[in-house]
Length: 388
Ligand SMILES: *Cc1c(COP(=O)(O)O)cnc(C)c1O
Figure 1 (cartoon, rainbow, N blue to C red):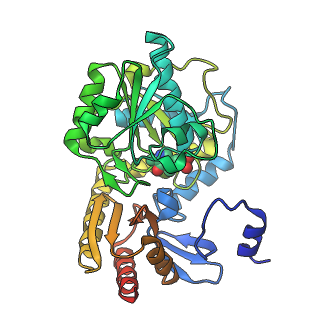
Figure 2 (cartoon, helix red, strand yellow; figure 1 turned 90 degrees about the vertical axis):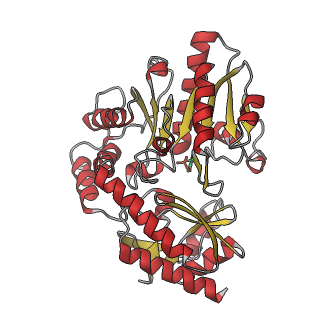
Figure 3 (cartoon, rainbow, N blue to C red; figure 1 turned 60 degrees about the vertical axis):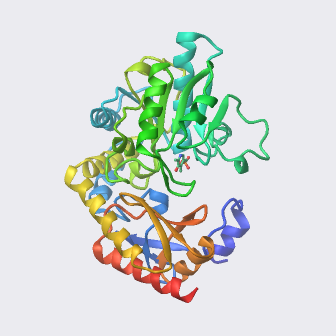
């Protein structure tokens, strides 16, 4: 059996895959099992933040794998404490909890927010408001947090205590928050929802509204974090300071990690045995993340992300089938005439690995993508759109 046949035989069909088996890569360039070359502007959904097989990242990860590959959370770990220190210093927040994915990071944020409120106000103040069209993960609780009806099916009963407000509407927020609300959870750019960038005035007003009521603001930076939008975290574009941040995807540079970072308010909330994760804070993963964070947090690197994003946007806008471009840094949604999925399939056939979000084409290229690779990617998109 070839790879595709074996996959179809033995792996649950939870994904509609493109007809490609990837084998290797370097930077934003990937190769399939037949040696065919692709430009990858998806980077494993924003995971390979430094591209495929970054030399420094490989060194950090392999050195750690050859030193100590895992210890339980009952012991102290230098890699984990270094990473936590960096995350706190860079955000101005206080404490980190480690897990292995975005959904787990959000679970931790939900638990922290609820316990904060439990400790201070008692058991009844436990509701969390999220936004319509959001995406927060695939566990039963994070599906509940996700403000899209299509995700609230099959797996009943879902976790209770979530309510959904319209994005960019303060009136809707006011109408959805009750005296039982303990937190508001938002993505400042809704990634899976179609690369929808929240209004600056709305996010600022939301943060003020919540602060006045001691409602914690949780920003899900799983997709937007770690340099993706040209700032280390996307909330920095909004002039707010969240009470909790979650990050995952790009943080590990290709290894599974999820972090929940909390500020002063909630720093003492999670006490021994209230939360845990066997693999959380794994030193090999943290070594990779330390390398990613050291690289990405350099202001010159972040400036480069915005410059590349602006260059990519200008190239995209010059394609006449492109109706509009929504972009923050290197997080890009491209509105086109025609079915985004069909076009993405054709792009892949033509050597461009691209993904979709709702009805837009979505690009989350490695933050290290070169100008030449951007040129090549936009050429392939242009010629593919001409075929359609
Ligand atoms: C991908 C994503 C998640 C879920 O992350 P997993 O690692 O797949 O669990 C949560 N929130 C946002 C905003 C995401 O983009």
